[in-house]
Every structure is written in C-alpha cells, then in structure tokens.
Amino acid sequence: MPGLKDPPVVIEGARLRLRRSTPDDALPTFRCAAHAEVMKHLDWPAQRSPAEARTYLEGCEQRWRAGTEFHWVIELKPAGAAVAATAAALDSAGMVGSIACRVHGHAADFGYLLAHAAWGHGFGTEAAALLMGWLQRQPEIVRIWATTDIDNTRSARVLEKLGLAREGVMRKATVRPQLATGPRDTVLYAWVREDPRPAV
Ligand SMILES: CC(C)(COP(=O)(O)OP(=O)(O)OC[C@H]1O[C@@H](n2cnc3c(N)ncnc32)[C@H](O)[C@@H]1OP(=O)(O)O)[C@@H](O)C(=O)NCCC(=O)NCCS
Image (tube, rainbow, N blue to C red):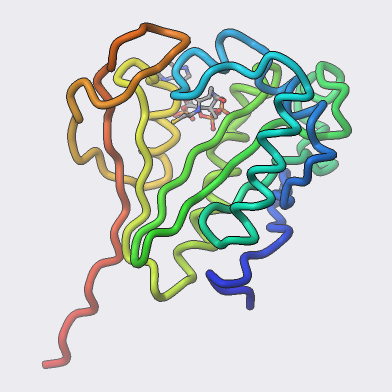
C-alpha cells in the first residue's frame, strides 16, 4: 500500500475519485475556482487565468516530487455524475474540485475546494473523507488538522462531519484576500489518533 513517501496517484470513492493533478488540469482547475463564492474564504488570491492555474499546478507537481505537499483533482465517477445537474453545469471532463495535504512529521493538514455548481451534494465531505481515510491508515500520522475562516460555516460543517474536533479560534491569524486586507479569525479543527489503552 502506498505510504507517505509514495502517496496514491488515485484514491477511489463511491461517487468521486481523487487523482494526482498535473499541469494539464489547468483549465478545469481555473474554472472550478472562478467563482466569487468559492474563493471568498480562501487564503490565496483568485487565479486570473488558466495560465496562472497552470503555474500553480506546476508548483504542485514540484511539491509532490519533493514530498512536501500532495494535490489531487476531484473527479466525478458515474454515480457522482448522476447526482443532480452537477455534470451538466460543469464542462470540465468530470473534474469538480481539488484537495491537498501537507505532511509535517506526525501531523498532516489539508484543504479543499469544489466548483460552486457541485456544492450541496456531500461531495466536499466525501472527498475529504477519502483523503482522511488514507492519512488515517498511515501509522506515522497521529494528527490531522484543517483551518477555516470564522464565517466559513459550510466548511466547518464538513470538518465536523468528518469527526474533527474544534480546538479553538486563532484570532487574527489569516489574511483572506477576497474578504479583507487585514487578518481575520480562523478556526482550528483536528482529529488525533488516541493512544492505545495499555494492556492490564
Ligand atoms: C466547503 C465545501 C468544499 C463544501 O462542499 P459541499 O460538497 O457543499 O459540502 P457537503 O455537501 O459535503 O456538506 C456541507 C454541509 O454544510 C451545510 N451547510 C450548507 N450551507 C451552510 C450554511 N450556510 N451554514 C451552515 N451549514 C451549511 C450543509 O447542510 C452540509 O451539512 P449537512 O450534511 O449536515 O446538511 C464547498 O462549499 C467549497 O468548495 N467552498 C469554497 C472553498 C472552501 O471554503 N474550502 C474550504 C477551505 S477550509
């Protein structure tokens, strides 16, 4: 089974598939993020063109090779495409979003986004559960964490449904360039592997 040194290129779910991104995913990547509601709570500036998306994905490719960050596109499988009008609303070869994680020793953090047309069908939770499932199967990983803007209630709900606990608010921790110039409060969520009970 692929470990942290060799993350899976594909993670299959029931309705979704996570597939390692390549620079050739630039156009659908740009389209997925090209919506004010999608970008609103994120901590990076909106991409202005498919060319900028390609540059970002080239960076993802380098970071995957370096082992510092792993980035997958989220694709709809037939069972996912059958849900609502999502597939019709997207013309991006089944890609509906992206998800990434970074590993720092015993801990990993992750983030995700979905095209606006794909919201509200449980896809965000399903994609994050696929990534969490892989991370949880890595014995070295004992902590998995994510952050959201204080007002990003939809993402907070996804993290709660995944079983991450709300650890607290990091005050004025993160600049969200689409929302404000100054730093905003950020909520920290985490899952930890409980220590096994000692034998008695
Ligand atoms: C966060 C995101 C991936 C969620 O995707 P999604 O597929 O719509 O999420 P799900 O359908 O799995 O779950 C959303 C949950 O939020 C709930 N929700 C929706 N709108 C809400 C609101 N305004 N307030 C509170 N909860 C809300 C839904 O009811 C659902 O919970 P439920 O299953 O208990 O009913 C998507 O909204 C997105 O891409 N947002 C922009 C990027 C982003 O914020 N990424 C996260 C950065 S930390």
